[in-house]
Image 1 (cartoon, rainbow, N blue to C red):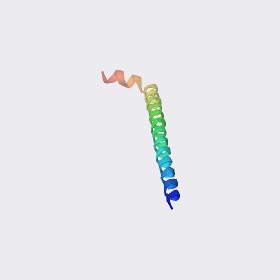
Image 2: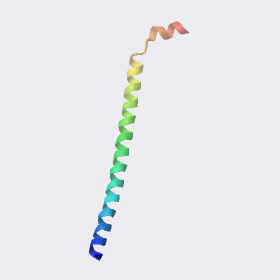
Image 3: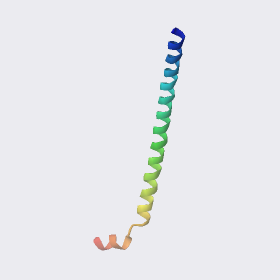
Image 4: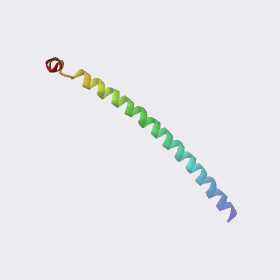
Length: 58
């Protein structure tokens, strides 16, 4: 019974460690992806901005 308990404890410890690692890696990847997407969208917006219309407003 004692060996089963220690085995399950070790498994759960590794599970939490792996889960934390996975979560940290996932958050890092999503942060990088979000930053790239933002810059890409901003570049696209600037590219398609109607320049003549802005001059008329002034």
